[in-house]
Length: 69
Image (tube, rainbow, N blue to C red; front, side):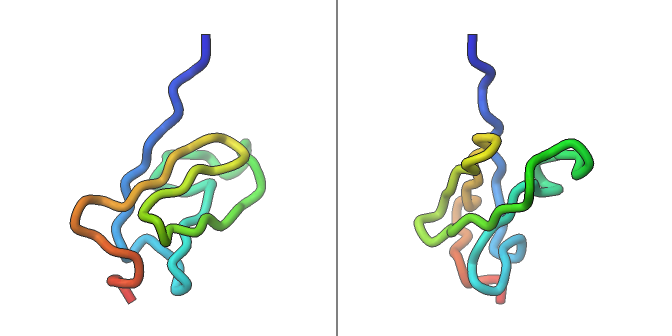
């Protein structure tokens, strides 16, 4: 049986200046000492999935990429 992947809602202010999210991410409640290398995820489509752990990052309803900068 597979484990369900975590979905993390982000605000525009949670993204980098270039509109990316990163994983592992504190909002995903991941401990940095036991996770994969940091990867940056393009959020231009409003969501992205980490290729290492499968965590799904999604913009909160009403938030847009670039609005927090």
